[in-house]
Image (cartoon, rainbow, N blue to C red; front, side, top):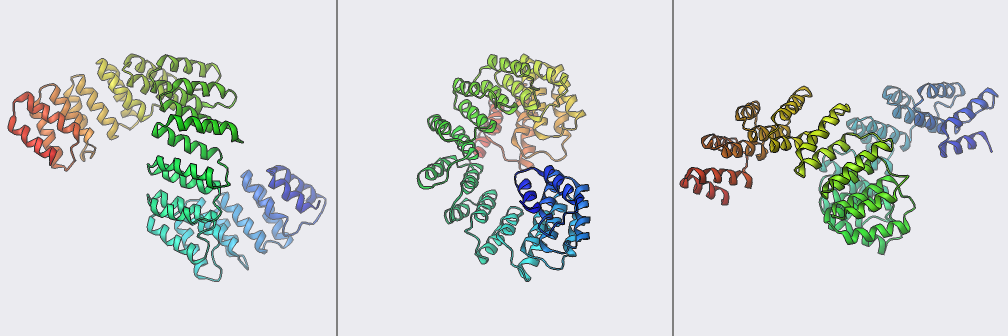
Length: 503
């Protein structure tokens, strides 16, 4: 086997260091390279993120006279782009005596990888209106970088002009683009017109349907895939289908998918395992989720454990959740923010405020920064227990970490202080917002709080301000205000609010 072929095979098989080592040996032995020796080596440098080795190869390219060859220069441009050295990449590109569509594609995809979408589209226009026509890879890259649906439609038109719109990778990118902009009709038309649909095509379309809130259609597409296509679902497909089953609470279908996975899946990884646990938990079958979890010994990761703990809490099995939490630590895994959040929010939602606060304090002792979800789920527990001191500690934490101005945190703090009887502290948080949030929950916390304590005029004042600032009241708002009207005997005001509600 020649040096070029052996190096190319090593790189193709993922042995990047070995390929570079072989080249170094050949170079030391004065074995001459050719123009095709360098591209796989440059790819290896990009994969290894080895700039020094890449620069050595660049020097060798210049010395051997191959730096001006389009194939080698394109690979060099691509390497510099992947190492985030745009200036060096563009210098090589600008000095190329000739370019081909692959050269332009290296620059366009490089700009996109580095977050320069405008520059990528600028180069695309040069390709589109110049000597070279963009290829399908270029179109696919650009479709995923479109910043608006109009921009995406423009790229779709380009794909049609170039005759590549039904090619599987281009069509898949078009489907993804339309799905991202909630244009499901357009996405469906493109998907149905795609030639030789691959499993990647199906996954992109299914993911788009799930993303846009139509899980029932996901199951229909999956059935069509099994009955009308030679494509075999992969682990990504199964994760998406199980997610749809979990959303729809379709336990029977989910169990069928589980059986299908056990019969056909070539790869059974932690992500797929987690999806199974999540589906069974959300369908209310924690025992089936736990059975699946126990069978996954050896491939479980922290995400799988978190999903099982969350599933136990979701199904009011807090004792099992605690046991899993302790077992997780015994197996050498370290709970992360998601693990602690599952415990804290789970206890809080089950009305076990003492336990929620206990785990919150343990989390702080472990040096974990509480997430917004942890804090917003814990504050109601402080309200229910009238644990004002704990609530104040949490408030202090939100100020120190600069999240006290988050509207969800502020709403939870207002609600907590109101329920603990500290209206002045709740009002202080409310007043610190010069521009009040549009979320009615923020206003409802004040209105219902004043109403519970009989401060009716203050409740009406907040409701009037809410309307002045054109925040749309919701059902909870009207219930709170009507309750105040009822307690104060303000019949006329009550009818006025009622007419507003039904109007």
